[in-house]
Image (cartoon, rainbow, N blue to C red):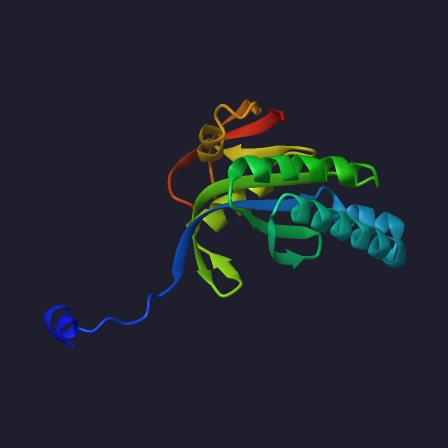
Length: 176
């Protein structure tokens, strides 16, 4: 073709990049709780935990990307919806005696089939790891994107995220 002659051959794109809000959820003290309950009771509780999270994901149009043990990695098409889902999950699992921590970030991700990767994913995971018990922690990106939504935040200061460049201003959800 003439275009290939002028510009050189074009291969398929390496991946599909898109904007997404990533949400990471983990159970606080899950190893200790599993030890207290024993394998069978813990298994039933974990199944209920997973079912409740999946119901909320369905209701808020979240996409489950990966689950490992007690951890969920999900994506959303908007940060306010992801925040509301995280808080709804917090309420739903509290009823069964589970306390969670959650971290969110919005940025470009790479999609290859069902897999989601990229620096935004690493940021979200690191934010989730820094969240306190019963806390939904977000980056300043998320905080700015939901401006005007009625969601309020408490400043949690500037943090270094392991393996991620720069310093990151983090905020905890106060009111949804």
